[in-house]
Image (cartoon, rainbow, N blue to C red; front, side, top):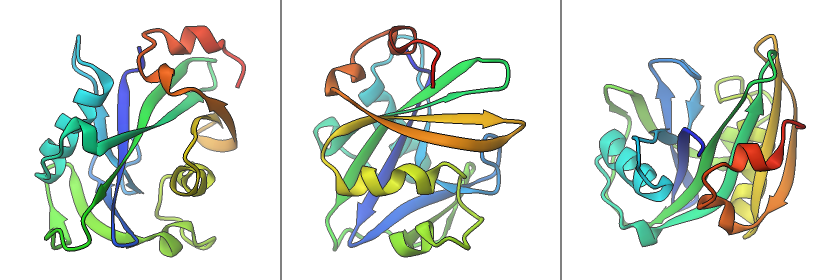
Length: 176
């Protein structure tokens, strides 16, 4: 089972992003998420993380599985997270910015997130965000990092079943 999850919460054309206080991605804007607790299902975990980090309470049915973000490090170690989206009603009241223990939450327009001059977002985010937001399919966004730098992202179609496969990293092998 992968150890982490991440969710991109949308409201009226904007995404709620977190500028993180701690590693990983300290000082970078990214989705909301965290680590799965032992024995916790991925969707239950992301629901809990959303509530803990934002105070927003969603039903599991409101959270849509969109695939995985996986990575390989210099040592060949694999890591990954379950990838989700959630859509809030345009009238949902959530004023920002909000300072939390995890960092600063703020609504950001997609154009700002994807702007080529924007160096303030997680480096792999611009590579997979367009597919995440525009395509109904699930993907494994395979990220290759060397010396802390993103070298490439390959987006490979996967089935929604991989949300429930306990050893997906082992099933897919080490080739990114």
